[in-house]
Length: 440
Image (cartoon, rainbow, N blue to C red; front, side):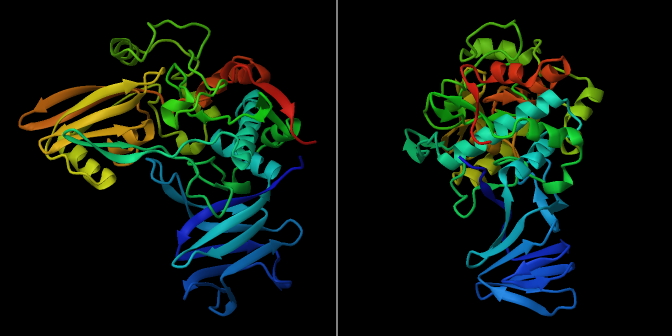
C-alpha cells in the first residue's frame, strides 16, 4: 500500500462560499494569484469571482491546485454541525480546493495526503499540547479508522427505519458515511474533526504523526475500524449498540480503568441506574480543569460535565422533537420508557408514550437526537419524571460523551498523563489488535 491522497468534504450543500488564496494557485494551467474569491452557483455551474466582481472561471467543477506551499482559507466554515458547539470559523488548509456542483448546491472538497490530514486531525480532536503518547495513539487510530472506511472492511447493514408496531411506530436508525458519496470523509465530528493547518500548531503533533507513519491497528488480517468517542463514562460500548448488528472482536465493553467497581451487567436496569447515578472511579472520571484544558481543544473547553451530566426536558419539548425529527406526532407525552441498554449502560431503545400513540426509538444517536435540540451527550441516562404544577418534565442524569465505542479520548488522555505509552493505551482500548505498518 502507498499513502493515499484523500478527498475531504469541507463545506457541503452550499450556494455561496468565500475563499482566500494564500499564494498562487492554478486553474486549468492558468495562474490565479493570492486574493479573496467569491463562489456562487448559477444554472448548476459554479462561478468564481475575484474581489472586484470579475469572473475568474465558471464550470460544473473547478479545481484550484496550489503552487509551492500555498494554502487557502475557507471563510465561515461550519464546525460541529448539529451539535451543541456548532459555530462558524475561518480555517486554513493545504492541498487542493475543488468546488463541485451537485445541481442546486455545490461542495468544497479538499485534496490532501493522508499523513498531512492526520497532523490536523489529532490536533483538532485533541489539543496539540496533549502528551505525545496520546497524540501517537490518536494518530494510529485515526489512520486505522480512515483506511478501514476506504476499504469498507466493516460493512454495517442498513437500518430498518420506521415500521408500524402495535399502538404506534418503531424507528431504528444509525448513521455512518452513507451520504458521503462524492468524497472520502467529511471534515466534522460526523467523521473526524479536520480543521486544516489552523490546528497543526505544535512540533509534538507533527512528530506524533511522523513517528507512527503508516502504522495501523489490525485484527485477523484487516485494518481495524478504530472507533472513538470523547468520554465513555466509565464503561466502553460494543459496536452493535451504536451501529448495525455486527460483532467486532476488538470493539468490546470493559471498564475504563484497572478495576470494575460496579455491579455488572449494565444491561440490567437496576445495575445501570446504580452505575449512572454514582460516579465510580475510571480513567475518564476527572475534574482537573487545568489538565482538561491542556488535553482538550478550545472547542471543548465550555463542556464542564461529561463523565456525569444532568439536564431536564419538558413533555412539550419531547413531543415537538419527536414530531420534527421522527415525523410522528405521539400527542401529549406521558412517559419515557427505557427498554434496552448496551453493556455500557447506554440505551439502545426507548419508548416515548403519548396520548396519540407509542414511538419506539433506537439506536443510541437517534435517542440522543430526539431528546434534545441538538444531541444529548450520550444515551446512557436515567429518566426521572417531574411534575412542576401542571407541566410534566423529565430529568435525565447521564454518563459519558458520545457513543462510547473504542477509545475513550479523555480516558486515553489521562492514561497518557499518568505515563502510559501509546502502545499501552492502544492495547487497553483495542484488545486483541496488533500494530502493523500499512505503508512506509
